[in-house]
Image 1 (cartoon, one colour):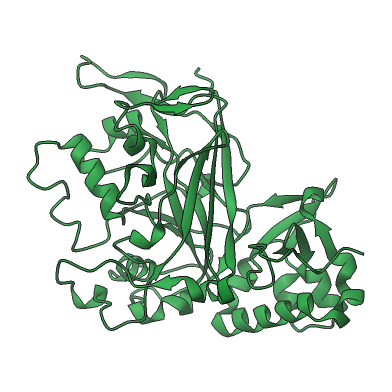
Image 2 (image 1 turned 90 degrees about the vertical axis):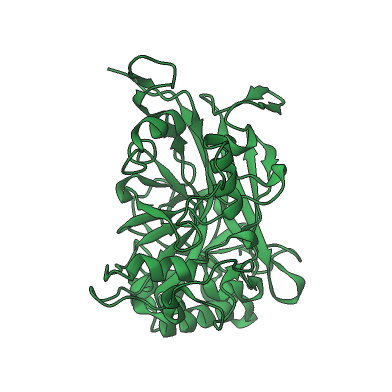
Length: 406
């Protein structure tokens, strides 16, 4: 019988219990699973075996029904799951529904509705400003400290960790070139981010206020916003990112509920500008999260960006995203934007790590300015948990493969 016990200090112990969707080898049937150590619990089958009222939320091929159920249901289901995996009397009833992770296939855990990406790290924004506007009096744009800058991405190309990323093709034009050329991107990059998953929708025309963040957002995951910097540089004026971003966005197979991250909540950095009332969180509960991210290329760690340094919080991003009356849908996903710290070894993109290619990274397999075909990028992270534990976030990984040009 598979063990319920996990090793002491395991970041995926009963204090965590992230949600995903899996299938068994040779089967196309998907179901909601909950991670426990290096196993996954078939949550729907366990609910049936125990006569739980949450069968309708857990015996599903997607997390969307659970996401839509709301905060009270989220908390109730989490309490039930915690009891199922910690009370010895349950082992006989549900032990057979606990499967080694190595024996299952993990899938995109929810149906993505809309996808929005932000630009919320002051360190990242200043680095980018210094790279591209070295002579500017201020490396930040005039609006940066007044609102969370963002863009709408393409939800249909959000993929689960482990999915290959095909090198995109597009137009590019270097400053010295007389005309644009077409071909595979030669400046393919990463962006280490955190994604927030919306559960409860909102009514069109009614903004979501800061204090309602936890009523709408179910949880978070790691996110890699792959970026073709050469395509992006040529296309982004005047409307912003388009083909340089829309080819792929990778997310973890595991969604960590906000309830698992209570001990990781921290205050955001001190504000240096007065905020308009709908963004002013001075009197609100701490809106930041202490997430420790690592970025590895082909197994070599190249950066460790700290999420606690993010200037704009997820609650402020949600409030800004809806302040014009735009509505939320179950399965909406929004990215934090690249996470970068104050130190060179804390930068969350190759654009910054190599200073736009000027300072190549030294890796065991050779130098890198931007990604080469065959490179595997993996983001991992943990957060402080109860009683000195660590809460692990599911890794997000992707391998670059060559594209085809017609």
